[in-house]
Length: 299
Image (cartoon, rainbow, N blue to C red; front, side, top):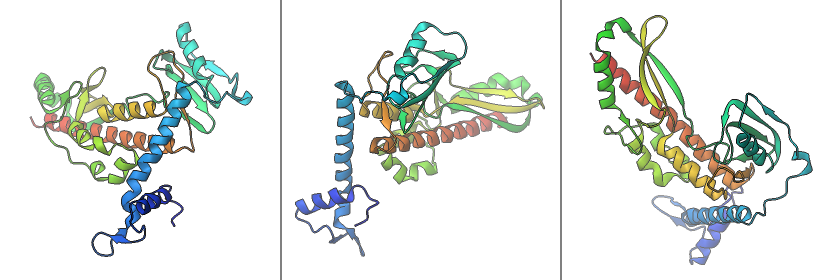
């Protein structure tokens, strides 16, 4: 038996219960062991059991008491903040293996943990501390076009970009985008986000709302640059919401953070989802930058 597969033992049991020899072969050619067809069922059982356990522990307030080694961990504060922000970060620091905390100068109230607040844990991670817009960031691409060549038609180019790129909540891209990320089946399965794959395909290349943007600018040498700012769109928000719920996290500002052990199955799946969303963010910014650049130089 392959000991590296955590689901094989249960999959073999399910296979045998169904009256099938786990070592018999199914499929074309040499096929594969029959127990492999029960692996997804075994995995789903395990995931549900762990998610239910985590949710029950927090809902019943049976989180393990904070060890003495982690009480009164140092908190460093940069800048001036309202008392609510200070109280929120101290609430977070009362849960889990906290080593230290910091509030940056731009910190303010967030969901469970302040935005601009960072907490370091030993052998744990906080889903509440990561947030929802996974991989949000900026990208700037310099074109070979001097700005003086297009300075008279900037409004027209801006309109062309707006026609090529979808802005707003829940929007989809009219142009279907092909990307190797969508062919990485293992990444989608390991993150438990495979059911969202087709929606993610439709949204790649959209920007969203809020402070997200596509901007036309020029650098110190006078060359046109395309600047973009957005993140993982619905994929990141959906995956973050799913795992926050799986970890027993609650909605609201003054709630305990959802902290999970680094050696748990939930942590493995959560990090797989975060990595997937991060890759999606970069893929989206690259496509939008390229499409905007084409609109800028087409004239």
